Image (cartoon, rainbow, N blue to C red; front, side, top):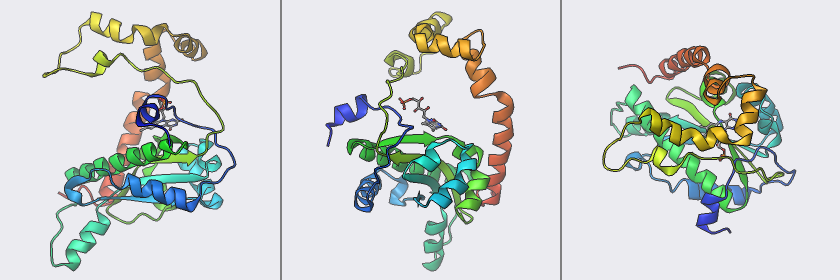
Length: 251
Ligand SMILES: Cc1cc2nc3c(=O)[nH]c(=O)nc-3n(C[C@H](O)[C@H](O)[C@H](O)COP(=O)(O)O)c2cc1C
């Protein structure tokens, strides 16, 4: 096992996996460690769907815009906000659950994301590679169908997991003072923004990215290509409908 500093400092997302299987025992060990993550009121209002079956992965692939990791990774983990199990337990014990509201969804989503990241660290400590799939929230309605998720359960993120077949170069991070504020939030002047983003904008890979996308600035690649307003608005509407359908907007 690697030491904790190198697990955290040397990691990269892994998008190519070798054929080597991930054993059940190892996966179980990683999941046990992941489930030690902090959880709201110790309720564990999350579920993790483990997908290993190639047919199921093929069914999930379009839900992730056919990102190839879904079918190529030996394991796909879908992390769900889940008040279904907990609410059933409450009802069976003569307790009335009050979790059909947005705050409860957000609580369960926080739980699910904390367990997801802890699973990822546990996996990376074993030398496994992971990649998150943000497509989960875009296509939650389809994932709900594919994975048979009942009311009270909403997928919030997906992680592909396997032995790395690639050692990608680390990508940049903003300087620490771009994300850390001491005592109170110190808003950014134009000069602060220039300073925070100058290293990122000056990088060769960023300049290449701008050129490939035929854009004027790096920011325009984000706003015009990668995370466009019209897509955000479109998928927001679908996700809000998912929250309604799954019973989280009944307040
Ligand atoms: C919530 C979330 C969603 C992500 N979605 C995707 C995705 O759909 N496809 C992908 O290839 N990478 C995805 N990533 C990985 C990021 O692109 C990656 O973490 C980021 O570029 C930084 O690279 P690093 O993890 O190698 O440091 C996602 C990461 C997060 C945290």
